[in-house]
Amino acid sequence: MAKDNTQIVVNSVTLKDLKANPKKMKKYTEHEISITAKVLKRFGVVLPVIIDKSKQIILGDHLVQAAEKLGLLEIPSIEIKHLSEDEIQMFALAMNKILIMGELQLEELKKNGFSIQQLI
Image 1 (cartoon, rainbow, N blue to C red):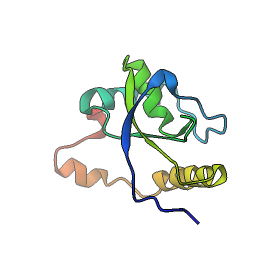
Image 2: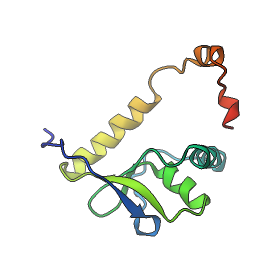
Image 3: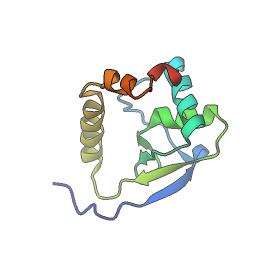
Image 4: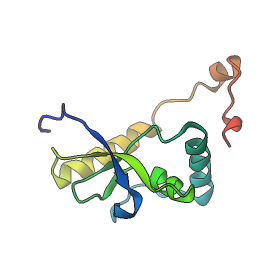
């Protein structure tokens, strides 16, 4: 069972200090990283990368790759301190699954004048 996690703090982390996760659950194509970079360039980095206490990337590898592509030096991060290594891996698996659930309401967005092609 997860320990108290009510104290979430977002800090900046230097990209060169981050470590790749050897148990990476998702692989992104260069095209997907380019799209992510376009989004970061347009809107800024508004989502933090999730890291463990050793600065290993748990979630947000695509954000790190896109930030590097843009020449950024730092990115916002949240360090997971209250979970064990096994819990961190279970959390990452659960979040990756949750992120692909649901259906984008593209027709509703079109009614409001938005299009995903505006970003790609």
